[in-house]
Length: 354
Image 1 (cartoon, rainbow, N blue to C red):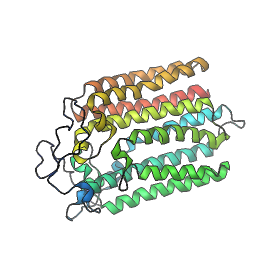
Image 2: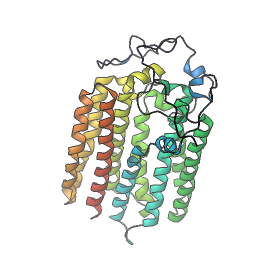
Image 3: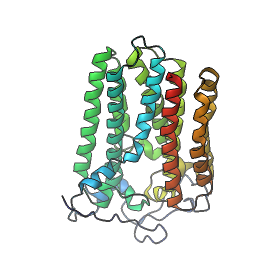
Image 4: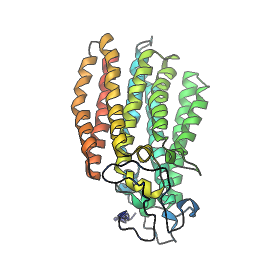
């Protein structure tokens, strides 16, 4: 493999010539909300470009990515969002489990969640890259969008991880005897791909947070509990809401960072639809809702109050997001939110189980 990686092109939206230019409703750095109109363009619309190469550009030699590039492409910093619901769901299952911990099933649940998360990350890399969306991004470069890897290769890697999630899930279903969960797993994989894939990806219509809340919150947490003890208790549902809310907070701050660039590319995330000011408020709601839910656990579990110490991570993130003016500030807030989500999930899981 090559030892160097091509630098992804990142166009300044104010200096783009012959490409999409923002309409009058395009969000500005002052936080004005976006209009419902599409950005005007002098180039061929992204939807009409042929897939198979980043941004639909004529084929230029693609330099192979390094091992480090592929590791970066897996977006390891997002993996805590897969760990949290498994930890919480397993703790809730332990409350009603006669033989104690179901370690094999817990590890299988964790494997499914991690494989699915990595598969989503590579699928997003592929889909955003072939649409040309990543041409405008200001965050870390992507394999497809930067030209470091061929689109078909990135798609293949995504499908491999989806396949691993499916096989692991099948083993889990056989061990637990919950065969109807196969349908749930299939829906999870389909929803993961069409988040940014297909002709009409729902992530481009402001529904990304819905997907994250449902599948990386409720389904992942309650599903983890169910395959272990064949029931779902109130602790599992509430913990699932908390996990989903924190995952939505991470997605929201990510989309706030890329708001102007997504608008130029025609990717109408929830942040683009709401505008900067309302998106900041919604981030605060997502970030603080888990601490409201925590009141229930404080009443019934003596160690639960200690989870409130994780506020030392999320409060700075809320302050940064509410005042951020540049991408690096949003990146700091995203890291704080992700780390807080992990510590919150592990701490609350320990409080429930012990």
